[in-house]
Amino acid sequence: MASVTTWRRLLALSKLLPQVSAGASENVQQISLATFGLQQIPGIPSIVGPFSYTSFDASASQTLFSFESIQRFRSARTAEQAAQLSYQDILDAVTLTVGRAYLQIIEANSRIQAREAQVRNAQALYDQALDELQAGTAPRIEATRTAVQLHTEEYNLSVARNNFEVAKLALGRAIGLPLGQQFELADQLPYSEINPPSVEDALTIAYKSRSDFRATLDSEKSAAQTLSAARGERYPVVAVNGDYGDVGPTLGHSHGDFAFQAAVRVPIFTGGRIKGDITQAEAQLRQRKSEADNVRGQIDYDVRTAFLNLNAVKEQVGVAKQNVELANESLARSKDRFTSGVTDSVEVVQAEQALASANDQYITSLYNHNFAKLSLARALGVAHTNYQQYLGGK
Image (spheres, rainbow, N blue to C red):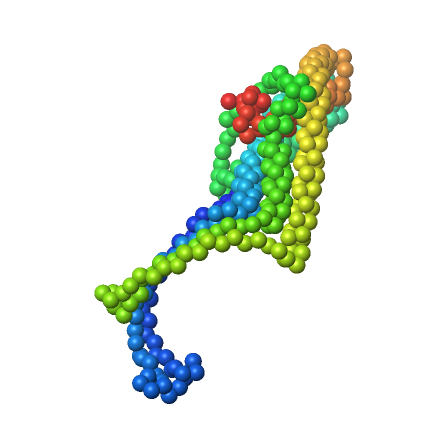
């Protein structure tokens, strides 16, 4: 896109710059005077030549004033700036995509750690039930029930490990790593809070920083300049041109000749072409204004949504953390009761399942919190430049 707009800017600029050319030629001619109606003139042959001459020439032209060309150049330059801003917006979008893929890897790795802990708990419970079965102090159903729970946790661990590897492949593709490239996580992004500005301040920042909004404003400005150029087609155009040559049978017997012209061109009747250009430019300007209004509304939606999500997940992290602590306490008490023979393995298995659910909620809330912070950076238009500040990583 940027290369296309650059080409258009250079093309529009060429209309305002001098055009200079030079050439050289060697000519051999033979003329029949009869073709000019000159026949049988005494003393003059009917065929002249063949004869030869050498010519060197240079020509130059310059448009001194063309309001249309000036406005079209300004329009092309503004469109090029809009394309550069669109590229910056793409970088922000890529940052969000890559950041989300990385957060998904961290989430998958955390689930592996949680599942491994669940497998260890299930293994210890199964070993204890098996020992009691062999000692004759517990029925076989206790060993069977704990074995089922152990196998369930091992299955969940296998799923978590596979999801982790798939997430790594997705990140590698998102950042363009070579096929088959192996890598390891270097930063786990621990939980960290941020102090965002108020919603109104955030909207002010977004309107100034969002590259997509600035690009649409430049596109609107470019369309307005194109409309001005279309109207400028009715204005006079002032131009000059001239050429100089050196012509003769040989270089030693040549003589210079030149011509110079200054002209003013005024369109009088164009068959409706100018009116058509103006109508088309007005339609494009209306479209660009609509696009700018739409992006303005999208920014308001993105910022307010990001704040709502950030506040919600912040509460969810606190609740999920407390739930994990309570689930760990409940599991510890259930294990003590089972060891003391007060209860059977059902209570322990249920406590383990409650802990697994609490861990899943906590891991999900951490992922949602980090992604909400990254989404806020994207909504403000600073994801590419300030993502570390919002995520809290190194």
